[in-house]
Structures are given as C-alpha cells and as structure tokens.
Figure 1 (tube, one colour):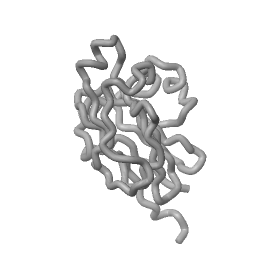
Figure 2 (tube, helix red, strand yellow):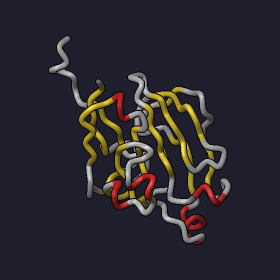
Figure 3 (cartoon, helix red, strand yellow):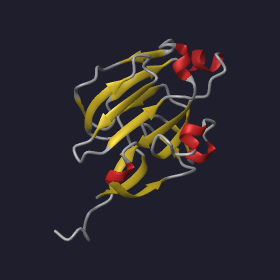
Figure 4 (cartoon, helix red, strand yellow):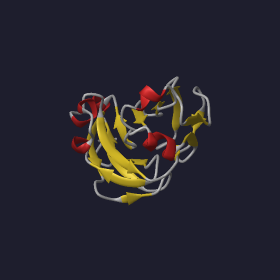
Length: 159
C-alpha cells in the first residue's frame, strides 16, 4: 500500500556459531563489503543450511559457497570459511543440488571442521545480501551465539 507497514524480512543463521561484524573478517573483500552486506559467523557447527526460503541458484564447484535467490529478488551468498576455495572441495560435502526451492533451515553443505582447521584455514562464514541496491535498512545482529536454521542474524526491508 504505502510502504509504511512493510515488515522486516529475516535471514536465519546458516550455521551455528557467534555472529561478528563483517569488518572483523580476515579478508578485505568481505571486510570492505565489496561482495555485499550482511554479517559473518565464527562457526561451531558442521552443517550449513539455507538462511531463507528461496531457490538454491548456485553451489560452487568446490562446495565452499552457495548462492540463493529469494522470491523478493534478494540474492544471498553464504561463503564457508576464508580461502577455503584452495581446498578444491576437500572437506565439503554437497547435500543438495542447485536449481531447487528450499526452505530456511534446509541442509545444503556438510563440512569436515577438523580437516579444514587442520589446513590452517578459518571457518568464519560471511552471509551476504549481494544485490544491496534491492533492499534498504539492513540490520545485522552482532555478538550473538546462534543456532543454524533458527536464530535471526539479519533483518532488512525490501524496496
């Protein structure tokens, strides 16, 4: 109608852990918000789930990241760890193929935490809205201990 009553839209944690500000991510692309805006999670879990209802539009060949497109046109990127592309897929197990509709909480990737950490890599996981021009008022929840599939980490309003 007038847009005054547009409710906040929510993204839930794709993995359990503690939320941190993107500026704390040890990768300039994420810390400087070059890839999008959102929050990062210092993970404690090993299952990465969909943060919202939508289409799983892409799972990277190396399974270290995936993208989603929501019904409202918002595009998300979940990037599991920092420099994890260097593992060429080792330590990551794809649980679902791209091109399907998923619900928030649907498991997408299973990780081998011990293996990834043994390679000296961080499992800090940025969760980004990549087409930030399509939303307004992104609010990230920082400093929370969250559980995958249930706790809200980002609220936003669609334009």
